[in-house]
Image (tube, rainbow, N blue to C red; front, side):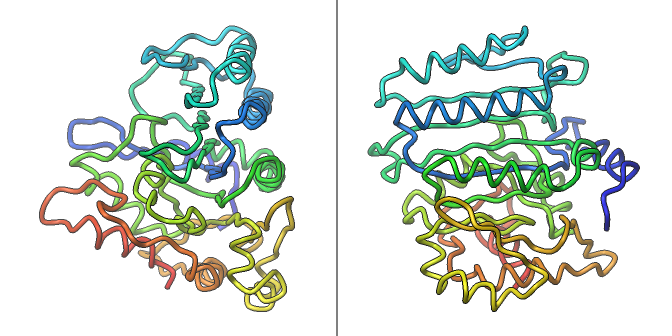
Amino acid sequence: MHLTKELAAQIDGFSFANGHGFVETRIGFAVELFFLGGSESRTRLILCDMLRQYHALFTDTLSHFLKLNTSRLTKITGSDYLDYYENIARELSSSEPMDAMVFGYPGKKVVDEPTPLSISFKCAGPDPMSPLGRSMICAYFPASFVAERGYGILLDLTKRWASSVELLHGSAGYSLLFEHGVFAGSNTVAETVLPPLKRFPGLDFSDPLHFEVESDLGDGRQIKSINWLTVINEEIVGKLGGQGALAEELGETCPIHGIDGGLIIQAGSEPQLGDVNRGLVLDDYRRVAKVLKPVRFEDYRRGLFVLPEPYDKIEETRRWLRRFD
């Protein structure tokens, strides 16, 4: 299903609210990357440059940012907030984690719900609670932006960002969007989150902080899931038999893009949602999922979703992970 401007407008208008009317998630596009070296000032400045790139795309619509160690959002005026983050990156001790969150709210007025204009990162080194010392960045994009600029904007940005960090893995494509730094599940997930995930297999579940906590006992070289673009580092490529073996298994419809430190696997010519209700099967996504299944993380202790009884959180998580199997 090609993303026309009309379809994109419909997607941007979708929201999934609980019985009290609180919007917990929307649909849009997400780019997620996991990497190492987050305690280094150099890496933190690279992440700040990613913020600048995002700012350049949405200069007139970004509205608020979150200062370090605060819970109250600050209004954006010009680009001064980017200088603030860069100063933090230079001056903050490597033993202290650095976080950044930037939002673009409708009408530049804060609302307590997800916005498809937002970006956040967390940079940290190893510590007793997180021995791997993984860092991450997650950027959201409205469907209307992707429809206007073309899918190449996602591919180019993912290539550029993934090549600039000590890459582990990542993804880009359609996703459920949540409020950065806030969503950790709720008792209404069964009515707001599970239905779209079960109907549209092309949707990712974008909660990188929760995945980082759940997978902290792994080696960091196991992916959460696949998407239109799935990013893997050279070590993971080696575990899968090398680029040649991957290309042979994937075939011509799933091109491989080389980047510094790894590869990007593309599932078909354009991102797809699929639709179980209409029998729309995503063959290229299935092909990618089959190839990457050996490096998929499944050893969840609590699951990705917070669910009330009688739901089994682990079982529901595994069902979603195995949707292309």
